[in-house]
Structures are given as C-alpha cells and as structure tokens.
Image (cartoon, helix red, strand yellow):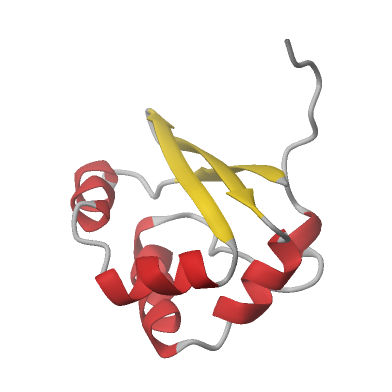
Length: 103
C-alpha cells in the first residue's frame, strides 16, 4: 500500500531535521523494513514535509514500531523538531493524505 503524509517542521529547525536524517540509526531502518516498509521518502518545501511510504500495511507498521525503544527515542528527537509528533494511534494509521489524482 502507499501512504502519504504531510508534517511540518518547527520554525528554524530545518537544518537539524535534515542532519538527523543523514544519521538515522541502522537499527531503526532495519526495524522499519522488518515491519513491512519497502520505501519511505521525505521531501521538504520550506517547513512542510511530505512523506511517501510504500508498505505492506501501514497500521501494522505503526503497531510494530510504536513501543520499539530505538523508535521511541527517534520519535522523541523528531518531536523536538516538528510541530506535531507522528501519531501511532489507530486514528494516526488512517491519517494519510487523500489521493486526488494519479496518472
């Protein structure tokens, strides 16, 4: 399945966010893949972030990562850099952007 998300950086945190993503822990990327993600891309326009996730099941992906210590630590770090933390609840699993058009 394909999931798209829109998130927003806290003001002035752009370079810190980009630097953090140059240093994503190998343990976290392995866990994301093991949880069923095939690809996760993030684009930035100003403070707006657009995520494209290709995965088997987004709700299952979030459930597998929610309490994983390396992810909890990562989400705490990202929470300092973004306006809204990633939502790991059942509602968050349904929070993707709606598809309007596709060629």
